[in-house]
Length: 199
Image 1 (tube, rainbow, N blue to C red):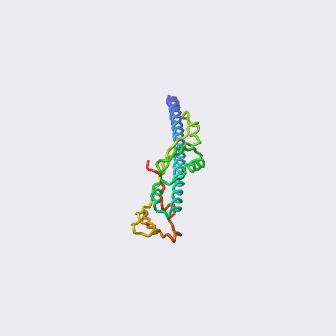
Image 2 (cartoon, rainbow, N blue to C red):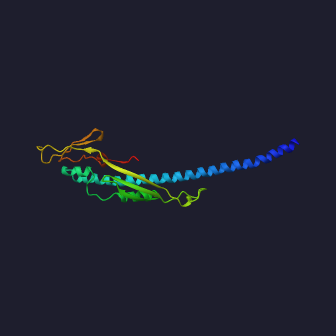
């Protein structure tokens, strides 16, 4: 009788064992699906961040070039540092970089000194136990902004006609500009910061 009871207990435990194992497998596949979705969202965010920064850096470089071309005309400096220089959009760089990250983007200027990019992955989450993920892509947004690092004060009225203002930049950098010696001028990264906006 005892042997029969043990065999009966083992038979009752087997369905419970199968149920527990099945539940654990389901949870494992569910976690895998969540991981795949998170990885796809991460890819989309990376593509959006990189594309927005690329567009902003293109404009930063353009503004720096404008300043270099007009360095002897300080009346034009303020418009350049405030982003009012007549430059083409930097969005082409966003599209170029997004393609390298296997994504497509919608890029729009955000004011005079910024870009907002919405990136969508070309890859999908893939086949999982969650229905619909095989065709689901990820979409994320990023905004990059350009900040002028330098400021200047207008020259006194009694200054020499060809005198140039002194640039005071973040970090305590001072640029004394001499019209007859323009061999050492600030670089784009000295003149402007490019960073992602806080979300």
